[in-house]
Image (cartoon, rainbow, N blue to C red; front, side):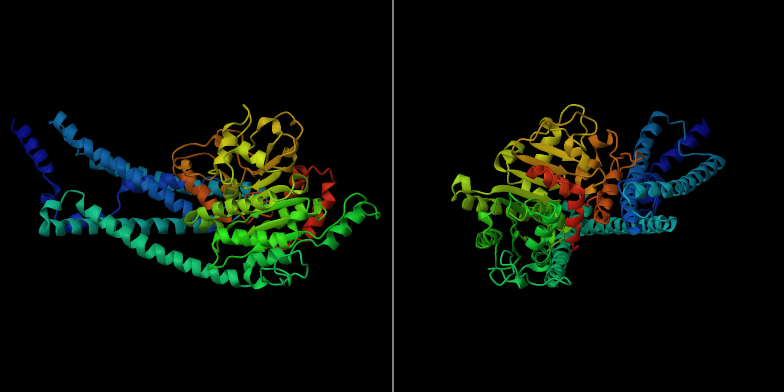
Length: 594
């Protein structure tokens, strides 16, 4: 009886509030010191984060995805620790004669050793397995494989970032506790259990959002504006009157921006197109089609000119150059910084034998990645106003004299351009043709077409209405019919093509990756994606996000690089049955990256 009362007394003492059992210094150390449960969770998610994704990783890609994954694992492990502690009082009340806190020292020591050994061994195994997987991914996307040192540097840097983040969280907790104690002294009525955390979070959010974030964006915009004014080497004002920046242009060459200057300076001229087609037609020259100087109308970004006004200026420039007198007219919506695909424009111009015009304008100095975060409205407004101004001019012409209307856009440009249309049917009715490359999947029309695809077709290569209006392509051969389905029916007059590589993280990234396995991961992988890639909550989201900045480092045909596939795509849209191999070589002669 005495022993039982003694055990109960010890248990009651163990259940006393921690403010009585621990000094203030002890409580502070407990707030700062990491816990083993969290460390174990972080290590487990590290193993998963080192698994394969779309692209071979640089050290900073590994560091970024690893750090975010470790923080998730740490939080998960800490949550399990909290659950364990929460159920202990219930167990003590239910079994008052059992001391659950008492664990034999030998068993506890063996448990610690086994956990540490498992964590270390698992990390070594995950690191060793990641190296050959990175080589496999590099082979699939035609890149140089990273070495083991690159992975090791990424692991080290990522773990360091996690430690810094946990340190910041610990300081936040200490500050929250201090804030609550201050509230208890001066405003007792406001000193609720979470009052310190709420006040500290509100102050931190305001500081970051209203001060640090605004200053960071102002700095990035300033640097981007300076870069936009820097001329690219070898680019000079064009002599052809059909181009913006020429002597006859309303838009001076100096105002076109970094990429705008490259657009009007580069690309094939009439002489280039004529030389190719004369050789192609055995020296006799084309008998049925005249070769013309292709028109490129472009308006750069100016602080005093709004996007609606810039659209009007672009159409005025297009009209000056004679764009509405050509047979084919294309509205091109650029990415951030005003970049347009040389491959797309060159293919369009060669296949139409110069009887064409392209119009575009710059809407931001930010890169696509920053514009995607800070400004998604500008590309949409640009496309909508540019389309509107072009249509106002077209409607002034009699139907038989109107040029055929096309659109093109890549990445953020495709996202903006698709906002012009209410749905896919509206798009097919209002355009004679279009090519969208690397379209982000949060574009509503992309989602609509993917959801309505034919049963049995994959999300990465949807089959839409037997291909009479709209076709998706992972590779050029897909334009004639999906490799896993029947050949398409014949095109009708309105032709839309979506180019998307299975390994393009810009297409397949989506916030829902955090909590939901996407359909394309439940399907057979694409030709340039490893079969070992799998989905894990939260972790896969950051793996794909880390792939995105490096997705433009490929040679072409993979990730977010769309080059030669524009030639057969435009041939399909324009209805041209040409020998594409020599034409691809010819288009490549005029490509000058910018």
